[in-house]
Image (cartoon, rainbow, N blue to C red; front, side, top):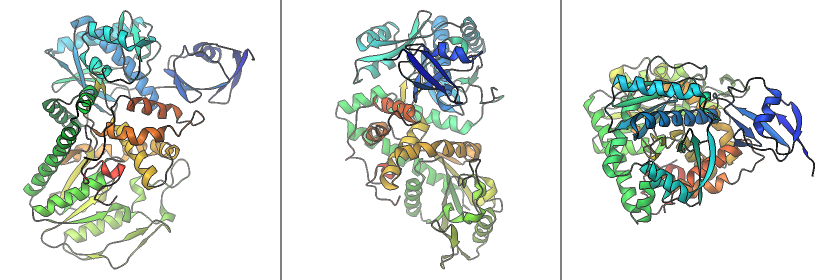
Length: 548
């Protein structure tokens, strides 16, 4: 066996190093400054600086402006927060509620928050960061982890440990304190220099820098925070706040109760939505927007059923029929057609037809032929009658540029997304983005013939489009609908884990696939027979009663 290993970097540089050289020592051979490198992608797996190289390897730097980089920064900053809170209050019951545009809202239960206390916490965090304390990763037997978490009175961690199907857990130790944040952490506390901590509503917001390194001046997306807080309180009412709660109920044979309660919450919110629409007497257009795999298609059809019960005649209009002709479609930076941008739509045609319909005129609706990339007109005429209401679903539905000629009194805007409501533990919330990615992966593999690799390839562009064309208009919505279901991860475990195993270490998405696979390992699988055929989750796993 050769004692030399060839290391190839992302920019094609190559060097030779000795067998079992630590990754950090390799990096220091080629870089003068490693302060912005949070972790490493080695052979398509996320690794710490102390990883020892045992074969020819490719190394990519994990920096803050990537999904992995944000997760590492977030976990490390939360470790600093945990250390500061433990130092000041001895015991602090922390409950993270929401992540919105990287910033994270949390509660300090049983602690009366004051400006002075916030300043003290922030000062202690800065002190820990300035000391640049080393963070050490250890693989700990479950028995030992249970003893450690019991000593720290960390009940959320203990509930989750009860149902783990493995014998060891990864923990991080720093200056005599320990915790786990379901992600790799940076080598030391000095890597998370930029942050802020601000009071907001009943809790605090841990604020992160944007990709340019700046902290926002103000807290935005107020309506989203309200929705997160509302659903968190609902979970507490039903005693279903953490993964441990879900697993315990499944093991106790309460699967049907879990499903019925979750679906009842969806139905109740749908009734509230219809009641809100009814109060606005002149609504002619219900605009539904949300990020990919939020369940917009099923939601729009369920909404249509509820509207019929109240005397409306819902008419569904798809924005997909208003794409520009293929030859006029804008190109992205990669030179390929960019179907995510609002400019891919025939904005003038949509505006004029919607205005004509509101004004009582008859219009001929287009039907887009995706095979040839052109709109067709096949005699589909529409004139709105007294009780007619249009349901228009599309990722750009909330963008005012599409309905600028339609009076506000005639529009009702709905934002739908799986605003996840379960905690992994007090410091970690289930990711809404992960929920949507798993939904899309399962649906696209089953109904569209897309490989898992293809889903990952498309995902970054999808998220980029959401950031630019959907999220800026969330606060303009009249109603926010949470399409997540507490039991969903236990269902997705069965469908998604076999798909994630299709990617091997040669794939650039191998690390992400492994992360999602191990995330799903936290859940006890749930049988799908009792899931209603009109459930939103059926849009992704199949056997539903609505068209997909």
